[in-house]
Amino acid sequence: MKTRTIALAGILFLLATAPVPTALAQTAVPVQVSTVQVQVDGKIYLAHSVLEHQTLYGITKAYRVTEDDLYAANPLLKEKGLQAGTTILVPVAETQAPAFREHTVLWYEDLDDIASQYGVSAQEIMEANGMKTKKVTKRQVLRIPVKGGNWQPAQTPAPAVNTAVNEPAVPTLGETAVPVTGEQVIAQETEKPEENAEGGIFDWITGKGSVEMALLMPFNAAGKASETNMDFYSGVLMALRDLEAEGFKATINVYDLQDGVPTGFELSKNDFILGPVSAKDLTTVLERTGGRTPVISPLDQRAAELADSFGGFIQAPSPTDSQYADLAAWAAADARPTDRIILVTEKLSSGSTAPAIGVREALLAAGTTFEGVSWTAAEGRSLPSSLTSRLTKGGVNRIIVASEKESFVGDMVRNLGILLGKGYKIAMYAPSRVRTFETVDGSAYHQNELHISSPYFADYEAEQVRKFVRSYRALYRTEPSQFAFQGYDLTRYFAGLCVKYGNRWTRALSSTTGSGLHTDFRFEQTRSGSFRNTGIRRIIYNTDYSTELVR
Image (cartoon, rainbow, N blue to C red):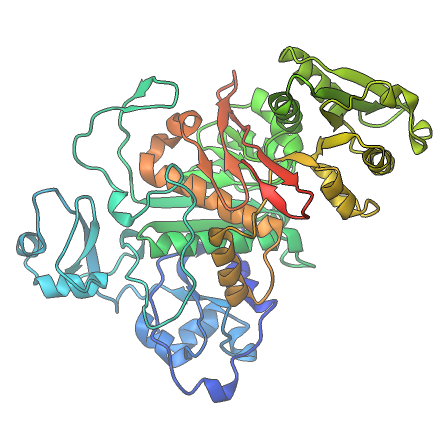
């Protein structure tokens, strides 16, 4: 099938960037050769992120290609010129570039030993890997120059980060998600078995040090491109760039679902498949892969039901029942003997009752003592006596508003404000969707100490998040959306597992937790052999008008 992979990789960053001012382009910035690969119509290209003050001449020299090669790979380049913050495709110059082979350092080797093995000098190895000293460490992957051969970019680790460019530091997503340094990537020596979180043992799985992934999204590149999906893709590319800087090798095969779903054979070449979004498209991909290649649902919480029907399926967004269960468990854990837990639901003739049912079942399953109150939206416009009769002034009234209806929640928030004025202590608990309600005054959430169980939350006070935001702004000239965060977190987490554990990385999934910039990962396996993420973040709206991530 036609793989419209991209014009997307080539034009994504052209959408919201400006040309480098001519006056500033006088001083060229050294070019770091990328190893992030994309496949376009069967050809392999390297994705190069253009930095400010880099020149077309410098890029052609670094990659050993001609300007005509770049123009052919990037049709808009000649028209718009080279722009800082954009990504361009660079054809692999197999006949011009030097060749390299890989060597994984053993515990007893030093650089001189390795150089002697391959008939090259230690200095040549240092130059090929951007090393400033001869120091090497166990399991470090080195590229060894091979004179007279052809370069294979899929086999080479990333060169050292260019220290001449002042770029933001790379955020780390947690010890269990991605190895901290490239030295921990490939294990070729005998290791003892690892214990998982439940105390069981699985055999050590040899890591591979490289990842090939497929991204399937309805980009609609030939028409009006989807901003949501483009944001997600931007986050994916950011993650691949950061993995490359840490010494990992990544190949991404991007498919626009506007052209249809790829064949099962094409998809089977990947270590994992990220996307599509909708349950319908996910079903098609799962049927074509037959459970042989893991398929990750990236955005739609409603797709969680597929985990019961297909093997090889991974639901990344935590389903709503996990959120409701966590909300109930949180209120129960916070409650003291003098407190009251009150579940407030709406009497509905139509509409969703999922929050009410989900929270109630979770409270009952946990054996939590609570009071239940229910009324219609019209009754809730005044302070219902059914609520006031159940309140206590001897402790905190922990009120779970189990509704995702904006008008009902708005009335409830107003009523809680009245109760605060009457001297009652209130702590409100509600589903994460209430954060999006435009008619509810946000300050009222703080006054009522709103507690939210959410599948997503980025703490902008955290240094790792700040670094990501600064880097994203510098590269794309815009602010990252929640979809950019999600694309970044999913790619870092799953690519990291694949690098660390190899082709059987899913065996470690249920025993490996991770914390991203925006998402927590805690997977449970279903009877069909698929996985659901139950990771939830707890957020409190404090009375001092701060917002706190407590887990």
